[in-house]
Length: 276
Length: 327
Image (cartoon, rainbow over all chains, first blue to last red; front, side):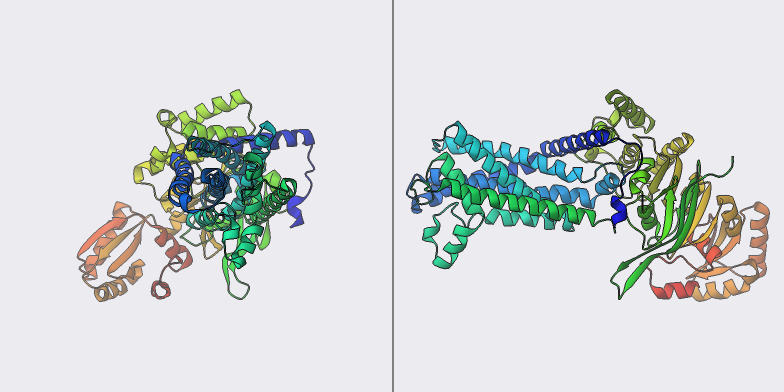
């Protein structure tokens, strides 16, 4: 195996290598972004779905849920994550398409860093899902979401959302490399569509049975939501000011970092393993 | 011109499956492609064609054996090999949602061509591959033949020394196949050495300087198309009988003319010349054999295998009993 990584002995300078790798990355990112733009159906679904869910929660269930605050204020961070998580999980489908058609074979037979194709999909996913996040925020504002964040808090919230998107995207990239077909790749999206429900996204965990509450309070989505909530509206899930925003944010960032690294390592391992 | 070996493979082996039940796909393949040459690897489904191409294009490691491309060892210097090869696989490697021009532009950037050179090369390829009019349409609107041509063009932004083509016309209608052959001939004329796999004898005959017959993971025969065809006979007289039993007795009666039978069909090899066909027809009449129908047919891949290996090609999905009947 070590033979694959034997050092290149010819006179190619390191500088050119880096320049080439950078150009391969931007090319692949440009390709993935263009593919996203050319797929209005998928873009529409990853937008319509969370907005429908938001309207459903705010107008149908909202009245019955005692969140201690305006329900739209409570639910918007959760809807944002639902949207971003689901959108990011679709990276699995995009990656899998490249793996199962001849595309990956072609890239792998070329003198390029073929893993750049994965990075391209990851970059495109982050950009795409930040755009859909902005749209969800727009709709939320229309129906009464009134964040009181200052510029710095906005920046923090956006960074948190981007971190969450990145983490889910990297996991999705791994899923996309290992599964056999797009249908299986889509399964990850299904999972990400439901993961936020058992968290503080839509109902305060205190209302859940105690065995579930423990999970809901500890699962990775909850600190991410609490962080966004704390930054945007200054309130926690019990409608009280978040007491330890710094600590919650640290846990949230930690989770995102862990999943990002895990996803990247697993994806590149699975990717390299293809050449057997 | 002295032969200059460009791709040299020796004793390539590859198995899939578990250690307990391995499925051997390549069972010691030896091949040489010389510079400027077109080599066709001809064989049925499951013979090991695609696996051979995947190994030689650095996508797969062989279990055993060695191979070099342009002097670079596949196992120790795959990066150097990738600099001189181009692969167009069986499954299209183009983005459906992008236009033909956009697809080629991506490949141009990945080839690190200067911007202007890339644009010129893209135009050149679109024209040469008869895709100029469709250049700005999405691939999803392309026909099967256009898609294959674009796929081939996408591998040629950087001019490779060796081009690997895995079944370039499988699934195409006869006219698209003709167009594809013309395009491939142009690529060959530019001096690119070509390693081609195909299931079609005619394709190998049309394009290749040399044909290697692969079956069951081994190269079972090798030679120029002329050499192989001489050994097979150019064509065959086929007689169709009312029953298989009648075909069997008729084949026996015509055994001295090399008659073989399968089902209700008896086949007599011929070089296709008027004199030989006439002499065969006379022999048939003399033998008192009365077919329902007869025709002169060009040899198929099956005939090649039958003649050169003494048995029918082992397609993966055929019933084993068929093989015994043919053997």
